[in-house]
Image (cartoon, rainbow, N blue to C red; front, side, top):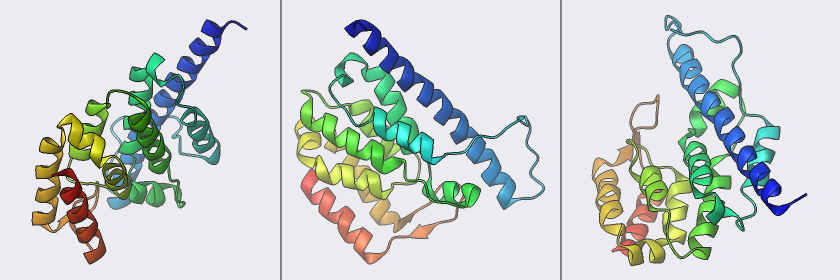
Length: 198
């Protein structure tokens, strides 16, 4: 099989997985609203809801294990990364009754490509850091692991104020949940990341 065909198959696999995860993400948000409020009516009922499975996690792990062709398909990879980071662990657990950790897979891959490539994926990094009123442990670990690169690129000037806002607010509001105060260890962790980024 020619090299181009192999690469085209890889891009198709990434895009196919991203499409599946996008649908699951939308389904989880609707199903979670239904769990919270029995009167919530699904405006557009679907014939079948999809959920995360061990097989989908394994496929994600497989596609995000090799960084060698990232520069050939940065858009496809970044779309997949953003989708993985968009999942909320509590919503997954509430809907599935199980914990599926998809964000750490994406976090490890994002750390690898950030270390290996000459330019940071600033759009993806800003999205996972600034999107909404929630910052997860996987995002914090990425910021910690790649603080030197983020600082060198100058996007720390955008990220630091948001981290300081989280600290000033004293907690986060995860999707579908009320305000959750930070534990002392998480506050200390965020403070240490801010110091690295300043």
